[in-house]
Structures are given as C-alpha cells and as structure tokens.
Image 1 (cartoon, helix red, strand yellow):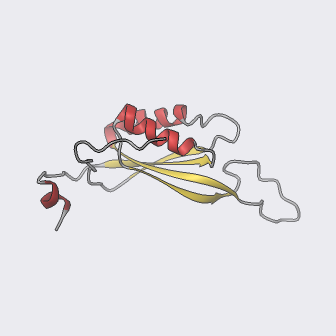
Image 2 (tube, one colour):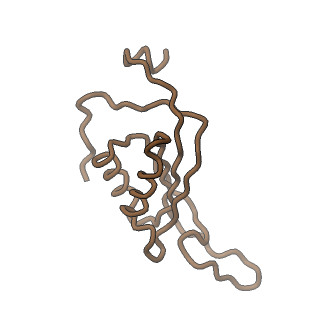
Length: 127
C-alpha cells in the first residue's frame, strides 16, 4: 500500500533541495522547526543529535590531536526548488547562524522528493 492509496490524493514527485543546518544543542533546532511550520508551512523537517568538531568552535589542538567533539543538532529541511533560496535565508536569520558559535547552514539539490501532507486537524506540539 503506498501513500497515494492511503490519502486518496496523488502526490507528485518534486524537484527539491535539501537544507542542512548544524546548530548548538541549546533548543535552537526546536524553535526553528516550529517557526518553519508556523510561518512557512514547511513539514518536511528532521532534527537529530550529532557530535560536531570545529563547526561550532575554534579547532585548537595540541600535538596533532583532534579537538574534543561537542554535542550539536543537525536539522534537515526539504523544500521545493523555487522556495529554496528564500527558506535558506529565513533559516539563517531565524537560527541566528551569524552569531559566534551559531552553527552553519548548507544547501544541496535532491534528485526528487514526495510532498509530505499532514492530515487535516493535526495539532501543533506544545512547548
């Protein structure tokens, strides 16, 4: 059984871009996800905990050793190609990437993606 037979709607295959954001583990990822859904209607977002080295801090080491990793969050956002640049800029501003230790944001194209539509009446999560 595929998604189309469950929803009764035909979901087209879209040309999309993937925006990846590395953020400090301080709750910025959850605030960003909520803002993306509330203000942009974006629902194809995921966040996972990762170990980051030098993405959020200076890479100072002694004797050729790697710097100690720090916990961070990796947020992955899938958007259509026409909206990608605007969403990239929005993420940069909302997540405050430009602040010291604010993280980084990257974008690459995907071969394609299927739209994700939430059923009607699904409430937002509470804080």
